[in-house]
Length: 282
Ligand SMILES: NC(=O)c1ccc[n+]([C@@H]2O[C@H](COP(=O)([O-])OP(=O)(O)OC[C@H]3O[C@@H](n4cnc5c(N)ncnc54)[C@H](OP(=O)(O)O)[C@@H]3O)[C@@H](O)[C@H]2O)c1
Image (cartoon, rainbow, N blue to C red):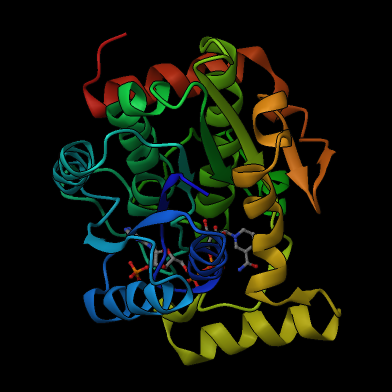
């Protein structure tokens, strides 16, 4: 497969599994994350899977817009085009913190960083005719609550709402991008990977991670990262990833989104807010 795939959050979990699968299919993979040793290790594993393919780790914190701009410039310099961009990096934070630009860091890292990265890579994606943008959502978007706005404040910080709103923003962004782009240039779809056994929630400590894992294991919801990554790899490699745009996929099939996610006014809100927070012009 003669394709260049950029995967954010490739040091662990779904991103790592997606990178390994795509490298195994012959793709060149550009891996993004903050943890340099883990990233280099995944790149090495990808090269082992396919010695002919290029696998490179690029360190960047998606919640830092400076990092994202440096990252995008490096990708544009090093790749002739980008065939697939997988907006996967994501986290939930138990305590309030802000990005270098002063944006609550769940929203900054999960959504704003990907909004900016996608825009800065659009010209390279369009060269793939069409480039594919695949953004990872979550069933958690069903719990979004916009009554106090999109972005959490320090006072009254609610980690679940922060995460749910950021995942809603991911899905809305995927749909809005599709509505604004000619699908012969760029397609944009989102994925619900299911409930995945990964490092998700480990950033908040072992206890927080175990609570998360055990709760889902008891409900027999957990799947492996490789199983969760299957739909991402499917959209990155099959005709389905270019045949449709603006859709939400789970287990390789189109699935529905919450009423908020398909509300055109919510779409306009996310777009305008993201342009403002990134300083990108319409
Ligand atoms: N686990 C689930 O059940 C589940 C369910 C639905 C959706 N998801 C979504 O799936 C995606 C992947 O999660 P996962 O389950 O694979 O969790 P994970 O194992 O914790 O992986 C998250 C990845 O994102 C990276 N990351 C997080 N914040 C980042 C930032 N600010 N800048 C750069 N990289 C960042 C991490 O790398 P570094 O630490 O190296 O930065 C890591 O590679 C997330 O978007 C998550 O919301 C997960």
